[in-house]
Structure formats: structure tokens, C-alpha cells
Length: 106
Image (cartoon, rainbow, N blue to C red):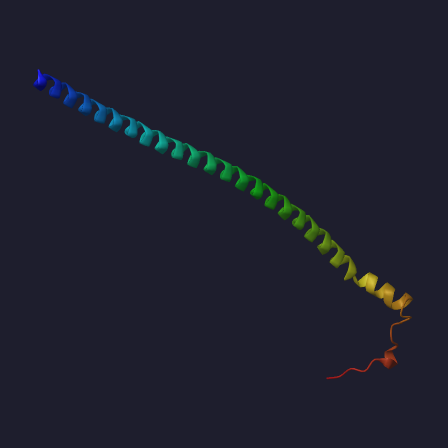
């Protein structure tokens, strides 16, 4: 009878060790799955943040392009020969020189 009890005890210990291995395996698998899920969620959040940042940058670029166009129009207006002539005549009291006043240098 003692041999039967020893065999039963050995069988219980083996079963117990197999259950422990089974539980630790399931815990390991669950940990891996949780880590993969966290990485997936983090990457999705990061991608969304990047999309918002790209949208902000494109909006800023559009504003800068509009401002550049306005500045080009303003520059063309300021460089206008008619405007410069008007300022020279009215504000600086300048006039065109007579033929005798013009000296040609070769």
C-alpha cells in the first residue's frame, strides 16, 4: 500500500508542477498579448498626433503662401514707375531736366 500512496503522491506532484507550468505559460502569453495591444494603441495614438501636426503645418503653409502673394503685390505696387514719379514730383519737387542740363558720358 505504501507503494500505491507513493505513486499517488508522485502523480499529484507531477500534476501540480504541470498545472504550475500551465499557469505560468498562460500568464506569459497574456503578458505578451497585453504588450502587443499597448504597442498597437500607442502607435495609433502617435499616428493620429502626426496627422494633426501635418494638418497644422499645411494650414500654416497656406497662410504663408497667401501672405507671400500679398507681399509680392505690395512690392510691385511700391516699385511702380508711376508711383515713384508721383512721389518725386509731389514730395521731392523734382522735375525732368532740360536738354542743356543733360551731359552724356562715353
